[in-house]
Image (cartoon, rainbow, N blue to C red; front, side, top):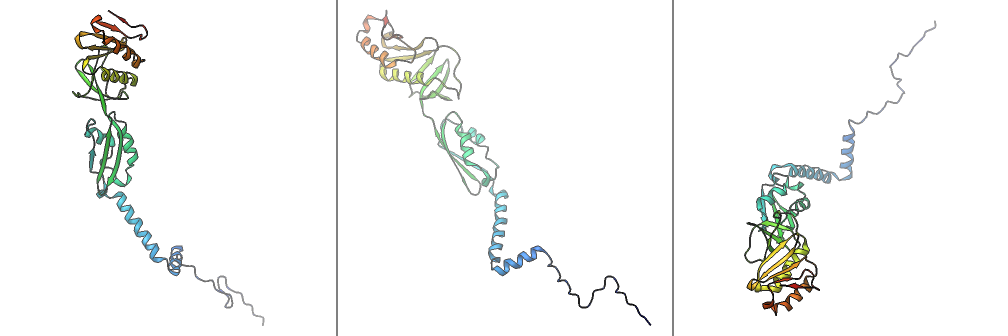
Length: 255
């Protein structure tokens, strides 16, 4: 009798090697390697620090709630705080240099230092421009620095004054020609107590009213040292003139 035997599909021969079971997950393998290398504590520490850092960055406990402004006299604190745009911002995400640049753009501000203090304070230290002259137009008085920047609408009886006799008053943040400011300061310093009124007109330039009703027309701010030297000589004979025209200092005219 001939017998036949057919191996059923799917059955494994007894002598065929079996495949090893695959690991449960790649993470499990990674964890075993970390444990085997002895770096598990460092791994757990780094994870913990990442969680803590995330909590610090987004916690409502570290939001800017107080801004302290120091050193300001001309610039208003409210304006500085508004310009900083830092209130209610995450303190760890504040760009202090950007805040300083925004505040330094204010007319009265020369430079700024900004620092953050945990948990919710921002410190702004302002260094302001120094006014050197009062610029008056009608009843408007403006503080102006040596570079011609109009700093604020205010008056100061301790500073020299100039009266603008034509046109509109300059606005805060605008700039008067620095040469004009330097010329006015030089005239004020040279004449001292003899100076009664100092005027500026965009067309005729600088005019000084001195004691005893004498009028000196200095004109444009160029050649001011030369003009003042001629004026010194003329003051020795001021009884011979009432109006002195020094707009062309090499050809002074008087009457």
